[in-house]
Length: 220
Ligand SMILES: Cc1ncc(CN)c(N)n1
Image 1 (cartoon, rainbow, N blue to C red):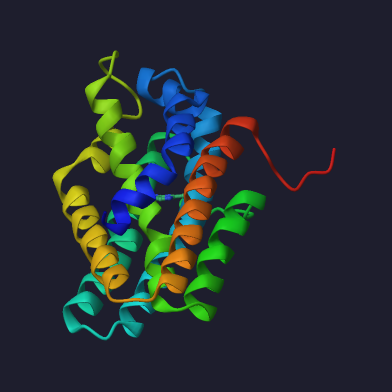
Image 2: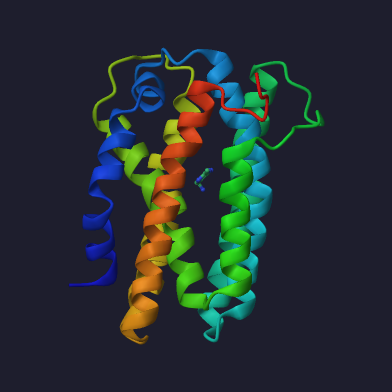
């Protein structure tokens, strides 16, 4: 069994919770309250600044030149393509582009989990840690497109981005790199890869949940 097949089976309960969580259901129906989507978009803008850099570091640490080029490109896309999506929503919501955003707990944890993994763990583990950021978004985008009930969904641009072919091509490549590197590594590192994949998947759930439940540093 390939690493990615095993990894997806392992996170099946988490993915199921993602698909059934209120944030995703309401995003699909177009009924998600705008302030919850704004919370998500603002935190995600912060997240992508870190994520883009994590991908670039994976590129820099890649022995294979093609893998390096692809990860530089993924990093660039996180900062350019996904940021453009955010900017268009900022415009739609009348938010200033340059407002200062405080990074809230889950975004803080997820960003720093990825940054510490890419810095202190073997590259195989870093590759596994970033894969849910690609793969879960693609699956969620596809699932929404298949089961969409509402025309004129205000979140259609988001849905189209992540169910789109361009994003899908990147996901396919990232999965191939992870499987190849897993085949060439030790059992010990494969176990660490799986742990990182599961943790990042859990954090994808928590990221949307934080937006829905308004989880902030506020102690009240
Ligand atoms: C938290 C998160 N995870 C993944 C993605 C998709 N790159 C994203 N935009 N935000």
